Length: 343
Image 1 (tube, one colour):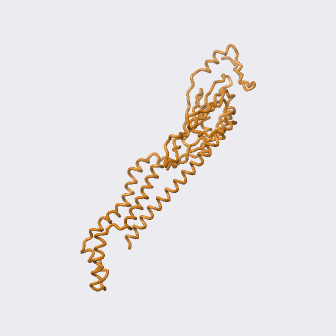
Image 2 (spheres, one colour):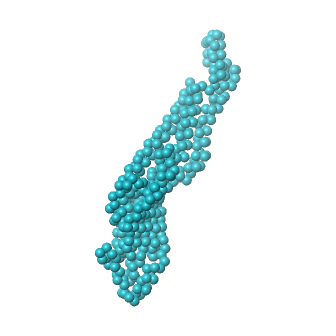
Image 3 (tube, rainbow, N blue to C red):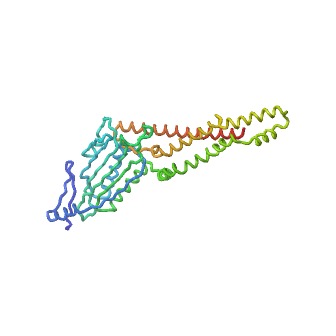
């Protein structure tokens, strides 16, 4: 190819590429030659609104124009809603400037950008495609907890770049990664471990914990009705040596009647029931762990933004309620068990 390199110019919202006739064939060959895709999926908790999407576009646009002689060829935004409908905007500007008052719940948005990028001074500009997909997976028929909270934990942010240059694509993704890491929260190590071992935790650990709390009380209760008369007699005599025979006899009869006929008292039953309720709540909390994690939302209209904020408040209310009820139930059971053992 000669040094008569095609140049890029803008003319009334259009891109004009000037190509020498003798270079046109080589230009088409370079333009159409196969590209490879560089992809990355981000694991964050987020609430994407139009400002966030505009930030992503500006980062991409600035980086391309700062590094290369590049121009935006076309842009397209597709908004996806929970009722299955889609809205397509022919440019990023149309999307950002639209004022959507529709009561539709947004669950995803796709941003597609195409640039003509000139990687070297003596090379022709090449078309590079960038696609950013943001999804909440919070459909109307999705999983729910208590009929209130939808599971929005499985959402994702994905970036695909079809490019002739891996290093160029990696650089764009690195800058977007820095932005997402600074703006949105990444799952902690505890969240990742809990998600990976949730089933093991429910099936193995909780029953063992439950058994350690409840079984000792249960064994005491079931054995309390068959204490031998000799043991009761020795206990009363040792603690009541100064009493007369009639008083001792009345005490022994009362204790034997209590042990034999009323081994499981209301107080003892309350101890076991409160611990059982607390453990049941703990199992419920572990089973619903993913529902109480921060959401992954796409709030590109006011209706969605209001609804998603209400979801997060509802999550926190239910979560804190279950935690307090669990602590209160287990604490009450253990305290009553301690009082019963020491009296």
